[in-house]
Length: 167
Image (tube, rainbow, N blue to C red; front, side):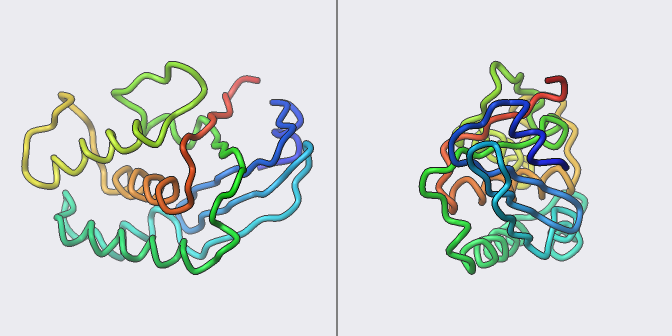
């Protein structure tokens, strides 16, 4: 990901953070004034969460709790990750599959909307019928939602600005 190019193209002028979620790493790119300043790489990604904690086709409540505790411990182990005034950005390609059946109304997703998506998955885990119809859930998708939820909650982000595929 060419973070400097992305920041220039979308005109980020203030302090920002771009989140990259991959199978085996989670990266925070820190920048300001259209320039990357630093990055912090966490040594796990959504596939690692899936492999370590989700042993059933649909994760159970205890598996989810263990995963939440793990993610929280990892996030809170580095004080630099806690947000003060950064805007959070994420590539549309990395988040689009999580937003269904929700439609992206603008280029921003609130913490409450991510919480709604998590709640939908939690209902499935508790053996309740999906609230939103024929949702296609995978453990990898569940891990992405969980990771994003914990990032927003514990690092104090109120929303995610979506970087459109076509700028």
